[in-house]
Image (cartoon, rainbow, N blue to C red; front, side):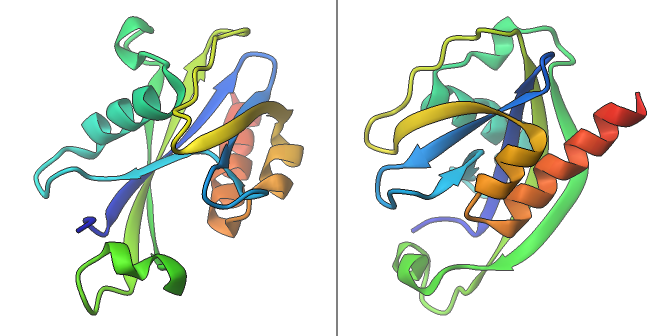
Length: 150
C-alpha cells in the first residue's frame, strides 16, 4: 500500500525551462517528478532525491548541494478515485511536499519506461498549462515567481 505522503519536484534549468514527463498509465498526463514516501519515517528530502533518480536518471547527489531546495510548502489534495486502490481502505487524501531542483542546461534525462513515456523542457508558463494537475501547475508558477524575485 502506498503511503499518502508524497513529494513533487519541479526540475528546471538556467534557461527558464521546466522538465515535464508524460505518464505511461495516462497518455496526455504531463507532470513534474512525483512520488510517495517508501516508508513512514523517510525524510521528504530523501524521497525527492530518490524519485528524481528513479524517474529521470538525474543524480541529485552529483549536483551542487544547494541544487535541491525545499519550497517549504505542502498541500493536501484528494486522490483520484481511480488511483485509491493503491492506498489503504478509506484513504482519500494525500499530503504533497514541494521541492525544486536546478540542473545544468542539456542535462540528460533517462525515463523509467514503466512510469513515463516522454519528456519535454518548456518555459514556466507553458509547463504550468500542460500539467494535468492544477497544483503541479501552481508549484511551477510559484517557482517562476521565486526566480523572478532573485
